[in-house]
Amino acid sequence: MKHSKLFLLVTAALSLTAQANDIAPAPKQSQAILLQDATVHTVTNGVLKDTDVLLVDGKISAIGTDLAVPAGAQVLSLQGKQLYPGLVALANQLGLTEIEAVRSTDDTTEVTQTNPDIKAQVAYNADSEVVPTIRANGFSYTLVYPNGALLMGQSALMQLDAWNWKDATVVDSVALHIKWPRADVMPNPWRPQKPEEIRKASQKAMSELEGYFKTAKAYAQAVGDGVKLPVDSRWQAMIPVFKGELPVFVHANDERQIEQAMKFAQQYGFALTIVGGRDAWRIAPQLAAANVSVIYTSPYGIPERADEATSQSFQTPAQLAKAGVKFALSLDGYWDTRNVVFAAGQAISYGLSPEQALRSVTLDAAAIAGVADKIGSIEVGKAATLVVSDGDIFDYLGHKVRYMWIDGRAVDLNSRHKQLHDKYQQRYQAKN
Image (cartoon, rainbow, N blue to C red; front, side, top):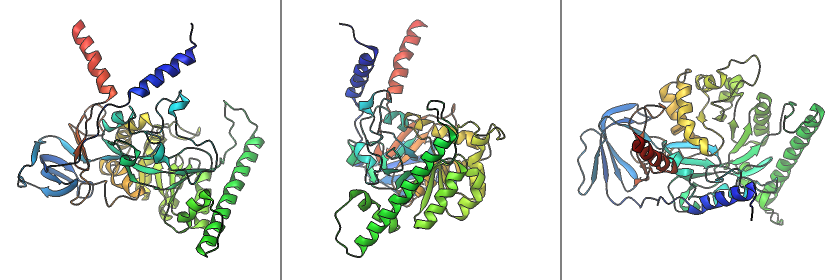
């Protein structure tokens, strides 16, 4: 019996996902850990050379030189190695999709279009084979969001060493995500449309978005006034937006989209963060003045306009930093999240300082996610989530992540990438 190529693809994919990530999550920290003589990148207090860091009960207990060794502590000498906070990747679908070509492994998007009550973390696959490959480049946390149209749903901050989505969830309902209607009329080569058709579709989407917010605000006001209404889970989920408790992350790249979103946020009084932000450099002073943060997802983008510099995408992080915009570097996908560290290195070569680059994937990313008091820097009292690298973690050729702890738990850095490397290294050695 002959099988179609599609059947074979699906069978192979399901077989792969059925194997699951067989790397068991680390157990809870049971003994103190003393990291000695490291070059400590604190983020908030500069770089401390030949410094010790003590981890106790999942927290950073002490930072200094020649710290006393607690009874029963595990001691690890890190002389010559770099110690960083665990990196934070924002706004992606890591753990929500495994193989893009296989629908049964893709939980990124709900079938309906208006889903402010959807929560991304319930679809998070802690056994994803992709997650260990992301950890191997220093990432300990990720912010996953549901994709879709207009009101897409709510994101959650996840830690990347867990048995299931419940164990992985660090913060539920970080933000409500909105896909902003288009502001341009450029036709899509894969879906040809006339400019007028595009304009009408955008106007319709904008009208629908405004209608949703008016309805949700009226619902929130009625509930606040004690009016008994039939429960609508969509508008119920948006009540925290109007109370100022749930930020809104708007996915927008075009300058006009960003400006529209800023006016919309002012009208409805919610805290705004821009996800995408390709044109954010064009209105950086306005973003800074309005205290709008940016999750910049185009660090490897090509010029959008004929008169833009070919290196504009690389320069944007430095321009945002110079204007005083709080931003995080990101890649809006899933498997490519591991390359965000190298995007930071690229941004450094185009004017971003190493300190600013580090903040963009640690403390500032944590601040945008609302957890800067818990993670994102090496400070006493914060989570013992740390990464050790042989060299500069932003150096594509010079760095190698050696150790990782999440809440003091020693994380296994094995991955399918490493397994395949070791496998074919043996073949290479056998032939030579």
